[in-house]
Length: 135
Image 1 (cartoon, rainbow, N blue to C red):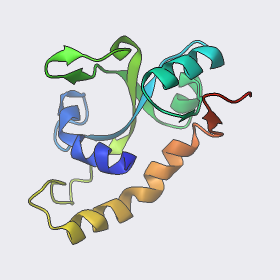
Image 2: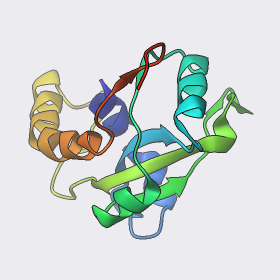
Image 3: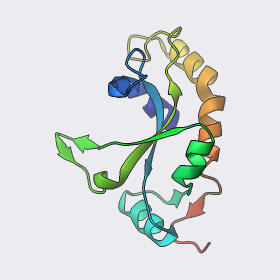
């Protein structure tokens, strides 16, 4: 589901330098100070598990991390001031736009092509921890 959402939102990232032409495939994340803060914020956004990675580690793996806002109906959501996106990479220029005009089989083919790179970026946040569990 995360990859579907990322592909749906690719065009929003055409404002990023270097991604003007195709947009970027991203992973949504939040900036936290420690594990306790991660648990509180994760519960506050309605999730039950989280993973941690430092910006330094993500950058060492070759990913950009950019601060971004999340708006719903032109209003910032709670914790938007802590939101960032990990840029997995550009949307491939040789692929058609990932939108409702593309048949389901075409969208599946795109997700299949991009899944391994997306999963590799997600693995940077392993291991996943339950919000209510101990470390």
